[in-house]
Amino acid sequence: MKRHPVRFGLLAVVLATLVLAACLVSRQLPDGPIPTETYAALSGKADGPVVVVLPGIQDDMESFKASGIVEQIQQANADATVILAAAEFGYYMDRSLLERLQREIINPAVVAGHSEFWMAGASLGGFGALLYERAHPEFLTGLVLMAPFTGRKELAKNIAKAGGLAQWQPGPAPSVIHPDDVPYEVWRMLKQFTQQPERAARLWLICGRDDKFYLAAQQIAGVIPDSHYVEPDGGHKWKVWAPAAGEVFSRIFQNAPDSAGPPD
Image 1 (cartoon, rainbow, N blue to C red):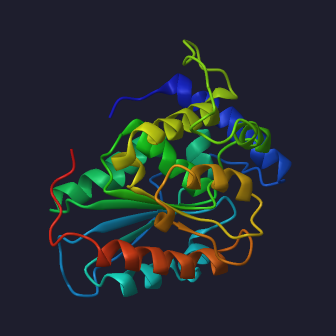
Image 2 (tube, rainbow, N blue to C red):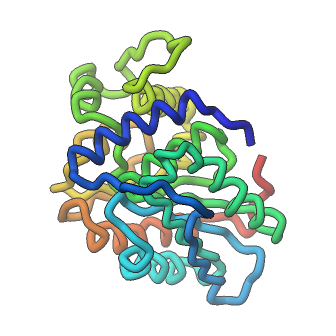
């Protein structure tokens, strides 16, 4: 996979601002692979769908495992292999997130015979999933976003004031990407979904009614099928996201074809 050092260097600046504001700055960058926990399909199927789950910024592996997300996904499909990829903030900071996801998780799963890939992400992890989609358009079978971080609230407000993503005019893509441009370019990709209904139909979204990223979620919800948006009661927590994710994955796998073709 080709590296994009400028883009992801700038991403680090954007995310550093978010973390400093939340007093959650990590003092050490990671020095090894993304920690993972793999849960084999309950059915024993070795080449069924793979669901890679990315955590929120406050999650460690223990809280990630305790979230209930694995059980919810595998109750929806016993053929699914679930991989918890505990990509902490440092993997965004050191610009290695997307390369590591591809090299350490996706590529080995392809070699093992899997051909259907889903990526689910909560909060910061939702942003990571969108970044992966931007870097590898339509490689994933689909994405499940749980209250994704998408940059400053003012950006979502501006999109809402314009009447939503279909009416929002982002202007020409910049020749040089500045620090604030990374979330902006993710929104530009999401705007493209308004003209790409098949691509938009690959995206599912969960956001609680009291979530701090609710306004941004409303803008994304406007470009995907109505049935792909789930809005439970509650805020920015796994106890809201995990049960809703179980509902979403049940819908996904109930409507899935008998077999999925290989990714592009």
